[in-house]
Length: 219
Image (cartoon, rainbow, N blue to C red):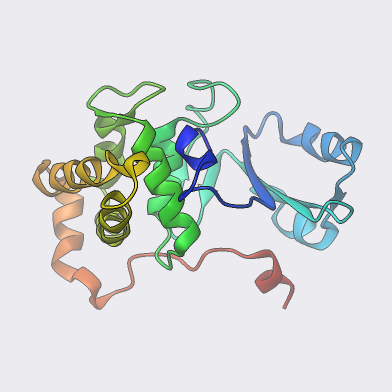
């Protein structure tokens, strides 16, 4: 998590698993690297999904590594193949934020991570590392109603948590205003014809996918 706020209460939490994103060109080198680091590959999962995702465990330290290839697939698909060089060691704060806001069944950890990102990063139009880019978020959400619906829904839920924390914790004071600015921008920004057509259907048809889980796939 690229956020200093995540290292201090009330936003600090334990991390037993780490998500990675690699390009498809680099994916063939990933298994050997993790084996060298002491991880064991999940052979069944990797054989079924290795073209888009790999999974490794470190039983000695009770750690897991989830490696996404080119995209993060959850409730929605976040394309990252051409964005992995925009930041060092991690994806950009904007893409990290989108990866959290696309989770329909959001939990406390996701709320905490979103608030930490918005506590530490300003919201700007420009798409560059170090800020939360409205241009990037608009490009994802203003052409896809499903993405828009999930992001605005989860942002609103996170805002309720952020407001409660900000009333007592200086560390989170910036997050509520930035969440409100994000929601307002997504409401007001122009939408594509495809977005408008899908919006007419609304929630009568499911607008998101069921996230792919390792245990679920083994069932």
